[in-house]
Length: 201
Length: 200
Image (tube, rainbow over all chains, first blue to last red; front, side, top):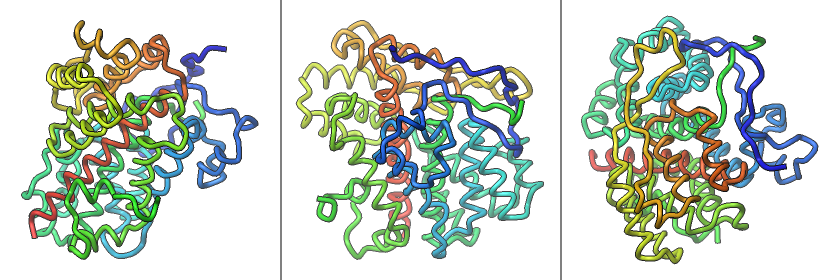
């Protein structure tokens, strides 16, 4: 059978940025679980991801998927100093807000709110966008993420200086850079290979 | 090979062993190793898969060129030449970069409250001469690259249908998408850390 574009089932498409749980519906056929080889399964890294159509679609190129996932985990989960987890998630959410990825923004706004306990500020980022006033330290992280996300990039020494004034050391600034850069990777896959849907709709 | 190969991000930034940035990258060792492993998977895969080496580097050189970073663009242009690209293809690449330049991210949201944030911008269609040299398969890829680089929130299933119509397989589209998305990461890590290193 020739490859085809999938027509998602009836669903409610979200029309605002939200911290609510969303689903993701693929536009291309994920691998069928029963057709996956050991290499495909290993590329998921977390066995539970076999339930995710997103990861089963990306598993079509298993070496790229596995390396993507291991890069992701170290940038966000490595506990060795640098930027606190909450602010790595803030950079991810701000990047996703600026690129316009409702799905990615929902996941990482939830994480940012959970780890920072600053639900109102995170919600303001979602509601008002990347120019929302979140206090200087968060403003500096959001502005740096946005400047790096622009194409061509607009990130310059002034962003480094502002992050330093806000109290970030160079490892923390490198974490902002890698977190924002990683969501330029993730946003493009999520936005172009499928679409978000309200959960359970 | 893994232990001895050159780390592309280190090379593009000019990170010397023992430098402050070398130490910072060493604090996120898995990210460093697997960013390079992704590069290898996409540009020097163990099996060619559904995308040729020349197509991978042509796409890479186009992505890099659209980001207007001379050093990174030169790296991928050199990779394209090493993959055996003709002079005509390399000229077509330069022409495509010149005709496709834009400033992102722009695009439309689903109709609703976010519509007030819609930002219009061009959708790229390769010019006749560029298309003739690139061929149908690669021309379709370049049009998709432009969408992903500059206005990914405009993506609709029709963009994937256009790739299928031009002969791309589903698996080939996954690889193509990963090349564009990964480079969007790699280029920003290089640009960001290079700026950091230049501000001691």
